[in-house]
Amino acid sequence: MRRLSPSLVPWQTFAVAAEDMREIVGQTLRLTTGARHTAAQYVHLAVVRRPGLVFGWSYNVREARAEWGRPGMPEPTGLGKGRLLSWRWLDRDAADALYAARERVFADLGYEAVELPKRHRDQWDWLRELAQRQLGQASDAHHDPCAAVQHAFAALDLPTEQRLVGIASVLGLELAQLREPTAKTVCRLDGERLELALTLMRRDHDHTVRQLAMRWLEVPETLFQIRPDTLIRWCDDRPVADIVASLLPRRGLAIFGPSGVRRLAELATQPHLGRRAAALAARLRLHH
Image (cartoon, one colour):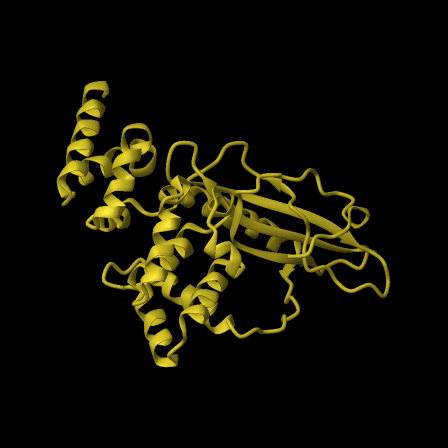
């Protein structure tokens, strides 16, 4: 969303300058009641996410406000970065509860959701929307989010370059960024979308695309973005197992968590990875 210029944001308290923080869900609200208000008053409320300090994700609720009192100016489509409502980072349930409570407060004050202008659609909007719908069904244990996207690629008979452009679009990246993964790029991505994109690349029939997936997995920060159960399944492939095994002594706990390390020790099909996971699990028991 476009940020308002500072002169139009008189009561925005402070900006949160965390590059790895991403909005998960949010809405812009406008105060609609009371003729005494000479300026249009707006709030953007959102649940935001960042990587946890040890592993997993941490959440908070961000609130940004603005007054819009200049006649003839278009209404704002973004309210800057605002402030975080909780002094500490929360789990998702607590952040959702805080978001809902704040939403009720604004509804009681007379705020209503603003319908933002529709943007111009591009050739990959359908793919981003398809990916989002599939990820929305991820709570179903039998649902494969990648299957529908794979079917769409096959039905359209897209060449390799176009498939990569589509996958980059799902991640919000340029093709050049997809081809040259870096830690900085990884940390700015949504973990669910990254997992979907890597699954698509790992399943691709083109060897060069599968190699590109491995280049992403060679960036250590990528492993923190993948769900432990998914990563354990991927470790059935020797190249992935080698990468994980090399990081396990120093970063295994942060990547998998205690229960994930134990599951890896039990389920690893590559012997050298299983031994390292078992050794780490034993150390965790000793220090418990």
